[in-house]
View 1 (cartoon, rainbow, N blue to C red):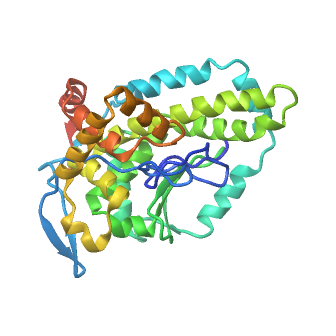
View 2: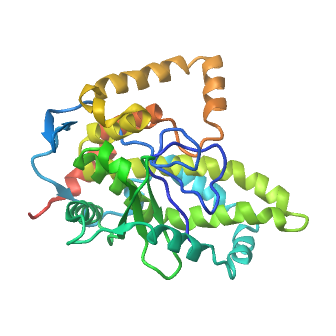
Length: 338
């Protein structure tokens, strides 16, 4: 499969991502930034680390592992629905194969990313390595390689390269912005893309959207139709991966906190952020957009975004954390052996 950056920590973009951009777990910015933010309800204590104040979140006394977890156990309904709609587009598979044949884009992406990053391992940034291994174990998935890349833009994304092991890249500014539990939630979000095979569709649709315009006759029509459907699917896929983040964090406040920090956080004021206030802000947005005019404005605001707005993602995670579906998953889980 060709390479493609999955969603991460930045903001959603307003156009389908290009082969040189990544989809991030973002809060509402262009597709070129990704990782949205996890959803939380409130912070726990404030502690000092390396002389800096960091807000922490309350966590479970023990960690649960989902030994038999299937992607459909936590896949968002909109993800399922929009995946079916993508598959129903006539000629999609055939055209995609034609576009992907002989492409060298995956090699460009591979060399661009790992050539200027640091590979995490047991003896290289071991704390991050442990967070990834633990998250992958909880979600019952083979851990991908993890790289850290110097960048002032907080972000994380996943690349799936044909015939090669997938890998996740996180930016140094993201490491500085988040607590360790929040970082692990971000890694879990990226693992969610792999668990749900989102990489195939992201890469496939990315290349098809770019290449379809060059196909005589049908190109423009197909690309136009795909653009709308692809962006809708991308937003739904992000909601699924936020759920993967919650399954690993096992505390909705952690995920919501990530989303809040990505929307307006900075290391120097981390101790002043309030997850409960952010969740109340999310409720206010939902109320304000419930009128006919508000509904129209909300749709116009989000229609071309690759990621749902951070406040909407926060509400989704808060609601799912109190659902019977999530509760049943916790009942099926087993305690992680330390």
